[in-house]
Length: 263
Image 1: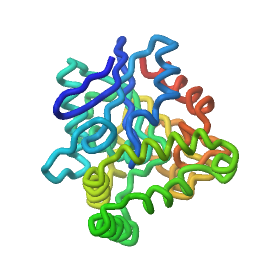
Image 2 (image 1 turned 60 degrees about the vertical axis):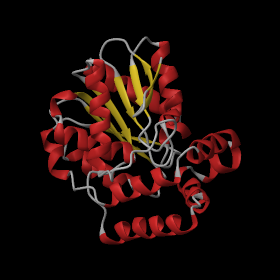
Image 3 (image 1 turned 180 degrees about the vertical axis):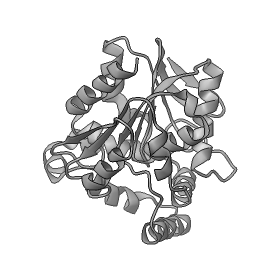
Image 4 (image 1 turned 120 degrees about the horizontal axis):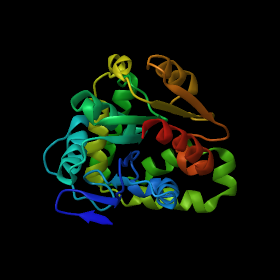
């Protein structure tokens, strides 16, 4: 089922306690297609929304901090009457998941944090985001950003030998609006440090790193996992930043383990 109203578009297959997929920047909910197919084949419900300004969700005019994205997800779940879910956030999706946990901790029955971090941006990373915003604002062109991210989202092997994966990722990026990209970059640049929240996660948590992720090293993610009570830590070999797309079978196996613990 597809939900599409004036505020938020989502792909929904709802049975029991659902998995809520929170997508990376600057793609949309369709990055989770291998995981949605996997869960559907097993009769496990899921909800995969697009953030405002991405995919088919219209942009909102007001400036959004990272908590604004979480509030949109929360409103969708409230509308559906969902009081408990398993969340899966990759990259920016992890930031949104942590914001949701900060504000609505009782929603969480389980959590996957993939290729993401709890810490806020350091000054250099924050300035890089703001510089990117200014370039896009002047040129209204996101192509340089997309080209740069494609180099970092996938390993050299995938870039050379899996053109269909690359085409899929680029297509999803090009569905983002310029204003949506700017809004999300500003939100990520201003997000708070969520490290202190990790010790409060008393439910099943799985942390997934790509072995060759140039954006968030696996050592950093392992340290993050160590702060979470009883978290499990997994490294997906021969994967970079979009590990769920690059190695979907391995990602799905790890996801299934977390679901079994959480339901």
